[in-house]
Image (cartoon, rainbow, N blue to C red):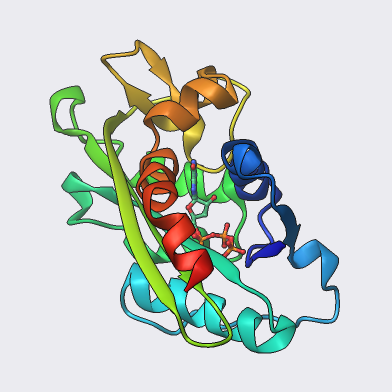
Length: 197
Ligand code: ITT
């Protein structure tokens, strides 16, 4: 009765644990498998990268796996950083990534700073049974960070209808509207069928 979340990102893992709590399943993450090495995300789409992570961990653990590949697509940057969101400024450093994003947008006016946050989720069993869903949320990139919650690009990602950045939201508020929350809601609707498959 165990699902392994194929992530090293503790903030992602926390959001999933909260959203999956009603399922009553035991959740593990890569923190429980310290012997798993670096998984190189060599795909060219979110789905390919999520599948690479899911397959590596399903093979390793022989347990059902959930993998998440996410990214920020900024219109004024032709959709960048996209699948390269974690490595935008080099080495998966949230502060450096946010600084690079602000710098690349420094001459872009407020009405041209729209962005989409995207998540693709892959559920995969060792027997090959697979479920793919995605979720998106629209927002805009501020010129300075706001808020202390969340992670990654959250302090710069402003949602006008809520009057808040995702870092100014509680986890429950973020999960209700975020890319990951929306993808997880779709996943939950099909989860039991996949789990029995
Ligand atoms: P795993 O691959 O181990 O799951 P990761 O953080 O490397 O963790 P991704 O490859 O999906 O995850 O990279 C996503 C990037 O987008 C990374 O820089 C995150 O910080 C950022 N990101 C993902 N979800 C986010 C969210 O909900 N809010 C803000 N930033 C987010």
